[in-house]
Length: 67
Image (cartoon, rainbow, N blue to C red):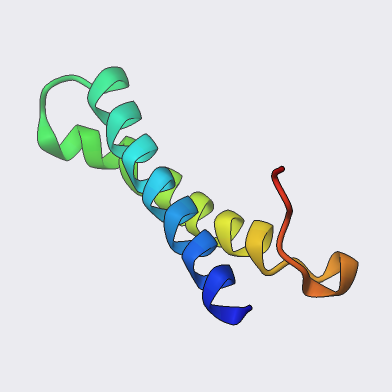
C-alpha cells in the first residue's frame, strides 16, 4: 500500500512540475530568469500540496480514491 501512495505522490509532483514550467513559460517574458520567478513559487507551494493530498492526516492517512 505504501508503494501506491508513493506512486501517487510522484505522479502528482511531476504534474505540479510540468504545470509550473508551463505557467512560467506562458506568463513570463522569454527571459529565463524571469521565468524562474514564476516557476519556483509554484514548486514551493505545489510539492508540499501534493504531499498533503496523498499523505493527508484526515481520514486515517489513506490516499484519496479517484474512482
